[in-house]
Length: 408
Image 1 (cartoon, rainbow, N blue to C red):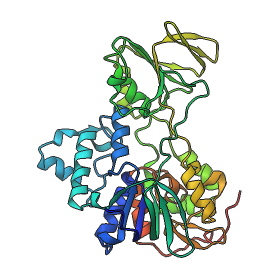
Image 2 (image 1 turned 60 degrees about the vertical axis):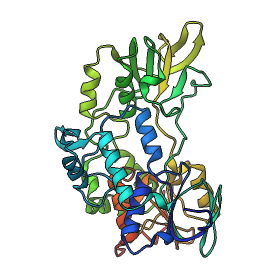
Image 3 (image 1 turned 90 degrees about the vertical axis):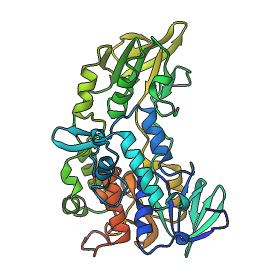
Image 4 (image 1 turned 135 degrees about the vertical axis):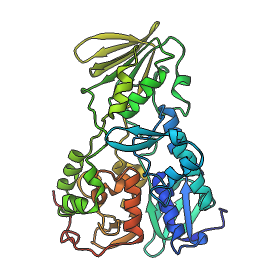
């Protein structure tokens, strides 16, 4: 898309899973390509997803084969059958089969090509949004006028880092580099991976063959869960009952979501992989200090235990998307309502971000920004589908709390 295209009906900020899914849904509706744009800093759809998946050593998705960016639930399954790649749909106890990362990405690329979605992308970084009528989207390559904007943004590169991490060459975050895990370490190194979730476990098992030893170090005991939340959170009626009965943006919604999400858990199949890796062990310990020495790194635990390592890799998650600087700038400039801990106050039926005077803005959100309305799977692929349904086909509003201000 050229720089002269400066006015559209729909502009999507972010070309990840959610931005790509919603772009396809809009493209399939009555929105013409000239009225639709995706602004992404990488300039390529799903680039950030592929980079992060490669960097943590992901081999299969946690979600099953009906969760993808295509229009038909069984599109990925049919793609696998047509390519004689059924063996890349991995049987999973108590769940439908899960696709390999390669299969998922190749199917996604086919969907992007089939719907000409890459043609909608402008490579730029959005720096702000203003405007009382048409929205003015400021980017690093100029301004764009848009009638509607969908924020499909995540926490970006804002990773959680322990206070002790500092600036040491041998201490890095799992997503600091785009290379595969084995390329991040040297043969025979003693590697510590800090974190207790899926990303940490994937990285740890990926480097075990190359490392002399691997320690997976977490503050809490490892928690095992097949899914990141109770499957009932996939059901819209359940979401409505659990969340929409509470004031939007309220602490009550926030707390219910935190209780529902099994954050930092490891699925059973990954636990089995950890258990059968001979040179990998788990330490339930919180580190308080890491120092560089002539022999590598000196790690000190909260109980005073001292350990030696050659490399430390952090898999300690992201900062909250609510605090993302772009989100804060947009909310401030457009006077958008925020609730507990910065949660966007949304119209549940449309995902429109409400202004401080209670009106619906033309800013719509998806992903974790929409979890207050979409529930525990908001940041996952099912959340993208739910967001598209709300934004494109809003339902009648029956929630008595929608006109109310958030309460503590």
